[in-house]
Length: 134
Image (cartoon, rainbow, N blue to C red; front, side, top):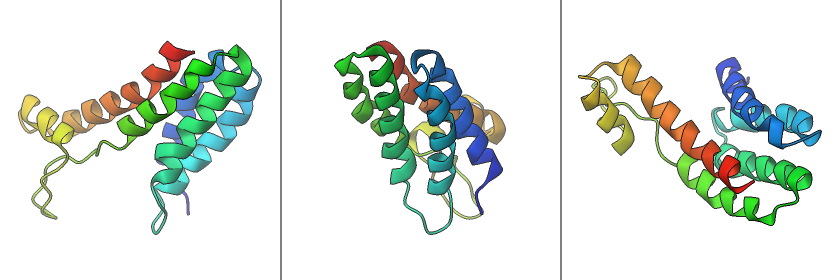
């Protein structure tokens, strides 16, 4: 079963780009949340989120803006979405991602703020190339 939170994240991130997607933004608002949530399901590959979503974003923007440079945003967004969300924890033992550790220490070991800042950074890094290269 798809996680409703993952569907919401995929929807909101895509919604940020719909003004530069034109009519295809409506289709992207259906496809991208499904790809985002699919990659979060047990036994599924994260490639649906990491590559599938940026490809849909870029193609929708390309169709609307006719700027081929937006295709350069795909590997940049892919790279951003490959950064782990992980916040250090003891149960189960996990050292977290480098970004998660950075914010965990910056936030004086406050997991909630570290998680918000880590995800916000990753989402921002994934969206920015699409906005800048449109």
